Image (cartoon, rainbow, N blue to C red; front, side, top):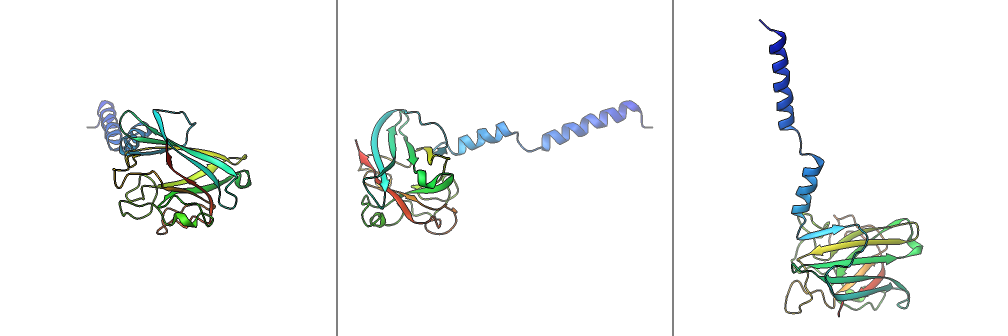
Length: 204
């Protein structure tokens, strides 16, 4: 015979089972993402200097190398990782996205073409930072606001300012700002559009 108490008990058991099978909470998912991305983290945030600044790249347009459009500042952190604070100011590209990548050579001549291809010391496919496969310089897309201003911070153990750290040394690499959006799929550059900005990473 089914009683009111037995129905109540069944309801409690059902609720417990549903809770145990539910997907992780947003906080749990965020925590997991933070752990997985610990060695290579990209975040949109206000630029707050950390550690000791060890390198700098001043960015200019590729059409006029006297026109400054931003900078990339690199900091050595206490845990051995490198943090980059990248800032872009391009009023002509307000309310759009631009793609940013590290390139092999620190030569912005020929409208940025002299930087050659993406810096890819690990010989991986091009992709989104933190995904299963990506180049060590695949910074990705940066959202520019109504004033053409955008920032991004990257913290990683993939980079070093030590020239003896082959495969990690970023000194002398080029930084290219592309006029289009990185689709994170097309090989080897993400179909990111023309090279509209360029800079060279110099050790301080």
